[in-house]
Amino acid sequence: MSPPVEAHSWADCVDWRFNTPGKQDWSEQGGKCFGYARKFPIANGVKFGDLDSADPARHYQQNPKDFTPCSDGIHGNEKASDETRQDPISNAYGGKYGNMATVQAGASICVRWPAKNHAVKDEIDRGVFINMPPTPLPRDPTNQDDFMKMNIAKLPYKNCSFLSDTDHTPCGGCFTVPANRTAGTYVVQWRWMLNDNEWYTSCWDLAVTAATNNNGTNNGSTGNNTAIGNDPVGKSTSLFAQLSEE
Image (cartoon, rainbow, N blue to C red; front, side, top):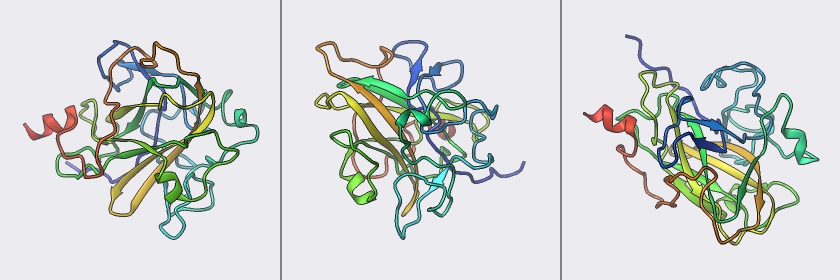
């Protein structure tokens, strides 16, 4: 048997809603996507997990010399597709691109990504950081250090649905949008650390509506929506990891 090929991940869906409330299932049978990252190519026919081989690729590896927060097709050790903010913002959504995500302040929302062979037993889970400014901004943050100060959650990377194909295993996590966010369109960053100082990001725009007294989730389901610590999140956070260890 050939060893798994190393590949790198990205945010495949930024508003994943489960078919069964309270049951996390990141597979195509377990839910549906209602929102995507900027310029996400839903019309190109590439199946889940294969956008690493698309042209341009979807995974963006930051260059430690500048750590440009969102891919622009110019910077980065792996440049990937252009995810810079559009003017107007709507230019990055609809038509050949996926829809923009929406959520109510104080509610949770779920993000999905492909494992790309990195949810295996012997790989450290360094986590996924969700960064979101406290207010809508006229442009994207240009300094990653500033963006990290806007962290609202850290999710386990290996929170996955089990499939025999570890490259295309779907994974994901849920986080809560702070209830004090005013209505507006915010930039959100998904930032995954594969190895020490090796970072991959995806950026999207999130339309937030004002909080009400009935906040919950975008799909009425529970999720792993609590921010966790800054340490590696271990090897047994996912169904995939648990089955691997048995």
